[in-house]
Length: 319
Ligand SMILES: [Zn+2]
Image (cartoon, rainbow, N blue to C red; front, top):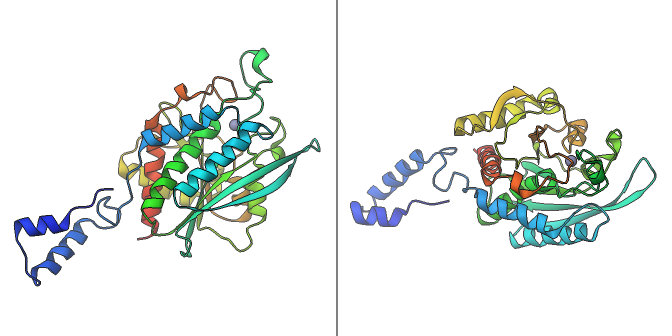
């Protein structure tokens, strides 16, 4: 964010005395009103290239499915990054029990900004990647893990860049960035084995009640198209409309005014809990659950479109 340099502007042009300065200040505040996107009241500027670096860094760690060494390395990377970005970070370990009876040791990574604020917004994304590429066109690849550039790394990349900015610019409301584990482990026909981290978190709210929950998932694809995910549209239409109208006002064309498919994702446990919750997702991705889900299919522009809208939405909640 660039701030106008009031001192040099005032000093060079009119050299105001004490009586003129308050008038100038008032005029400046009017021009840069909340939502106007400039000055101290507007959000900081999301950098798509920086977010894309976070996407690539996650992929360079390796195949990050629960139980793998790379999954543990990723947990450390994410917690360290969030601490670097001045968040208050805590870990929520839990056991995810699958319908097969198998148990996974999982960890949600929780970070907070503006902890004192009562009104809070939860931004969430899953960081785990799928252990099997069961949609791969080549049957020989279907037992291999996916790289998860779009399905996993993209949502986290957007939230890491937001975290970096919130560490430098205190948001006007509380923001909790939660990186969920165990979203993508289940077999395709067993819905209960998906979204393990968000389900656990939503069952243990202990009085925490965010005003809204926004999940980002598969938001990195080149030529991103974000339709209105159907569960979000059915159960949290006010929140969804608010976010899409922010995007339209900003001229961000990736957000489209049409209803897309229903997706089982990390927003559903919060909808069930009664909290307005939406999922921003482009499910029309031909490399979904294949070993071709790699960074070259993704773009900084797509991450930036989503990140800019989220930051504008956050800053509007404080006005
Ligand atoms: Zn997936």
